[in-house]
Amino acid sequence: MKTQLDLRMGASKGYDSYVKGLFAGGVKGAWYDPSDFSTMFQNIAGTTPVTAAGQPVGKILDKSGNGFHMVSPADTVVRPTLMQDSAGKYYLDADGIDDKMSCANFYMNSAEMTLFVGVQVEFAGAFDMLLELSPAIASNTNVFAAFSSLAAAINRASFTSRGTASVGVYQEPITLNQKYQWVSQGKLTATALSNIRLDDITPIAAATSNAAQSGTAYGNHTLFMFSRNNTMFPFNGRVYAMVIRGAASSAAEILNIRAYLRSKMGV
Amino acid sequence: MWVHRCLIVPAAYVDVAKNLCKELSGWDGLFEVGLSASGSLPATHYISNGLIEKDFADLLLAPGDVYALAVQRGIPVTLEQITGVLSASTISPDQGAEVIAGLGLKLIN
Image (cartoon, rainbow over all chains, first blue to last red; front, top):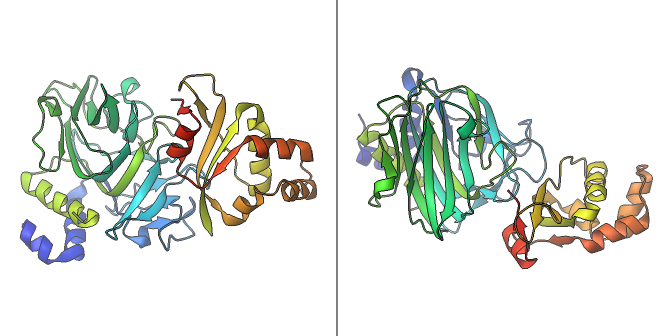
């Protein structure tokens, strides 16, 4: 197994092959990399490539090999924008108003999952959806969601995994306009897990739960990014990279993907 | 070339604005997000925010040109309606959240 040091020495190509390898053996999931221009298109048909920052992203391809490409619903203002920050790092910018993307039939067919996101929250409203499997987790089963929110004037990052019972966890406070390596793990069976970790920040008690979720496997639903059901709760922030694995991840894998996220965020 | 614009239209003009954008730019489904001072229904304004083509952004500054194009394309609208919707609307290059706050409005979710 490659070590974190090996990956650093191998620079971005080493990370790419490592991340790709995490989907070997039939592991389902997705990998979105806004720094890879070969995976992005301005239009939703996927015929006009993104060539520079400041252009809309109507479609971003899944680099995992599973074909879970994210597409905006229309070639209009609802597309997120590819941007480049002061460190030269590329990100998808979601405006917190009407930007949205989705992927139909996102089926991991696994009772366990790990979510990795290089993210920066720019504004937290009452409930701002970064990612949600199904149109609404509360009315569906075998689903998950990641979102930012504002509770009692404290900004928070939250993850909910749900078999037939929802188990939500959160980490707070989060600082707006700060880059984070967000890692969440879900296991939605009776012996369950739902957790969230940001960087090396000591998790609060509410950041982990083993309460039973009583599900089977994350189901075949549409995966929505930057909104709920392409209609509400818009996310306002940046995504530098995102990896969603339909599998548990080892401590070493988590360390390595976090290193990958840092390379994408310049931190 | 793309430019960022935040477009906010009073509810009274939203149907005209949606139709004009659809017919002139081919963009259907704009102004679906409601705004109000309280963040609750009913919506007093509607917003679209993001990248639009610079030619279209420039067009929005000239009601006469919008009207001429509308006539050319057979859109049943008057110059008064176009002038009314554009003068009542906010068209800003600033970020949407700032523009919304500046108008004392909130997103309705």
